[in-house]
Amino acid sequence: MNNHSGSAHGDTERVFQALDSFRIELPSWGFSNTGTRFGKFVQPAAATNLEEKFADAGQVNALTGASPTVALHVLWDTPNGVKDAAEVRSLETKYGVRAGSINPNLFQDQKYKFGSLANPSAEIRQQAVAHCIESVEVAKALDSRDISMWISDGANYPGSQSIRRRIDWLQESLKTIHDALRPDQRMLVEYKPFEPAFYFTDVADWGMALEYARSAGPQAKVLVDTGHHYQAQNVEQIVAWLLHLKALGGFHFNDRKYADDDLTLGSIDPYQVFRIFYEIVSGAGDQLNDIAFMIDQSHNLKGKVEAMVQTVVAAQELYAKAALVDQAKLAGLQDECRLVEAEELFRGAFYTDVRPAVAQWRVTRGLPHDPLKTLYESGYVERAAKQRAAKNAGSVSSYA
Ligand code: PSV
Ligand code: MN
Ligand code: MN
Image (cartoon, rainbow, N blue to C red):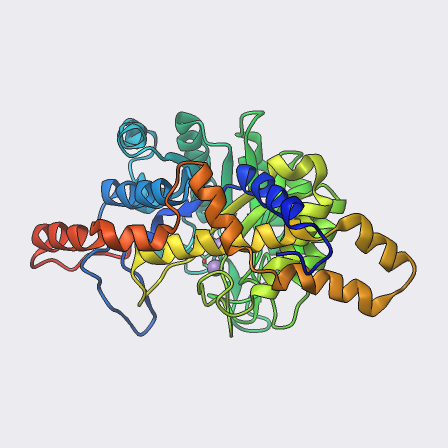
């Protein structure tokens, strides 16, 4: 396992060290039935309520040991706000996973047709702010640190909305929400250049997200969703900059081929994930503990629990590979501009097969050697399909 210039023993140690602290959050919405705008293919094993989402997340964590938290979407998971906190608390205990980041929903309600926090109507903005403050309260009740803000606002046609006035409105809204945070909480501002709006979105890229975060207050950081970039954009460079500016709050990981496809992490371009992870392992330093690694995927065709196990495993493997790069040696080669040798050292880590070391790590930590195989052998998905299909007979489950 040492074609990138480390010793085999040293490699195994690095892999173990990297994985011991690597945690990645699961999205509750990744366990329920989702679709495209053309339709939805319902899966009998998909979770149809919060308990089933917790059960599935608990299963993924039991198999991987790397995903002890589950992100919640307020409208779908805690529709009654803080009143639902007690139920969440009991599900946490029952299934061994905790509530993670809290996601307000600023895109589903009809009133947000022309925007939420940046809507031209002061009344709608106020309602959107109130929903976000309620989300902060939910987070407080659950001891969740992060509020993940995906602001779907934007416009479809030139001239149809004022780009500049919306900046002011959004800044004001975010500041008000920031003021509601507890000192140990954070607001993560997610950017996305397109969809659902296709002329502009109000938070289109990392520069805008950074500026909105800065003007909101010191507890606001940027959230990088890997699917939310233009094709060919250098995401690892954005990550390096955000680290440099101490403004990286976390990631929503997924892969994409065309747009915000929400495909399995590393299924299309694992080298990009490796490059992003390399920026983290080499540059995060004491920021590392404050970077929230989260999955943001919803699988229409793949089995949900299988897909999540596969994703966590892929993330662990790519993170382990990034940890294998001999950073001091690479810096030396870079300084001497030994370009091909530097690149080969870097690529060597990426091409190293870390799967045996990762499996060994699992066994030494009391985890299944092969989580996917153990999942198949356990019959969990079949059992869930039977129980859930019987319970839901005759009713079509909703998105959430
Ligand atoms: C929509 O693009 C989206 O995928 C965003 O990435 C959010 O983070 C996610 O939905 C959950 O609201
Ligand atoms: Mn996202
Ligand atoms: Mn997205």
